[in-house]
Amino acid sequence: MVNHMKDLLRLKTSLNEEIERILNEQVKVEAHSSAIYLAMSSWCDDQGYDFSAGYFAKQADEERGHMLKLFNYINDRGGKAISPEIVNVPKDFESFRSVFELALEQEMHVTAQFNTIAEKCFKVKDFVTFQFIQWFLAEQIEEEYVARRILEMFDVIGEEGTGRWEIDKHIPKVSYNAE
Image 1: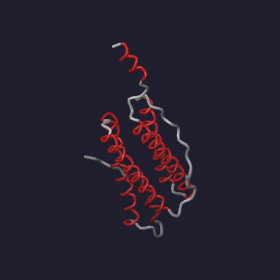
Image 2: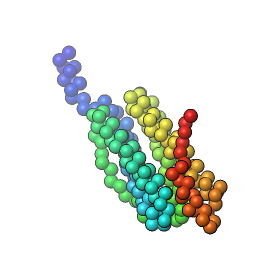
Image 3: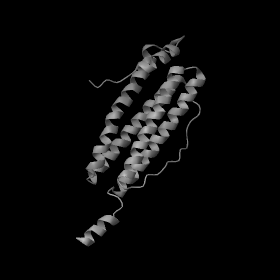
Image 4: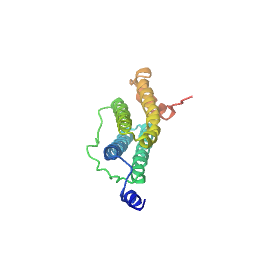
């Protein structure tokens, strides 16, 4: 019994090494998303799309929150969370529409990443982490939905004349209601 307790105390983490590694990768993905959204916010602000600038600033904050949620989880489970280096953040974008197309691509990428994490959790029977990431998977439904609805406005409203400014005005009103 005494030796068993010593062995338990020596165990630093209950996280599988592979799970810790992919969670740290996801910390980096979330940080990168946050930085991209911040760049999008700045670009929209520069172009005079004030509502979209605010929307992307809020998205940047949300992604940073997601990053910290993962970061803290890794540490709380006895792992070692790694503060990510952020590189390859665009400063300029092709068009107003392309910013939102990139946002949807980004969200779809994040969904795919969380699906991979879920799959690996099952493989190594880490049901604690699997349960933890359920929140993120549910969040991705909302993120993708909003991005798709915004992109639809480009087709419905159109970009001609004052169309882009009309779209910009509607950005804060786009939301997801699961009920």
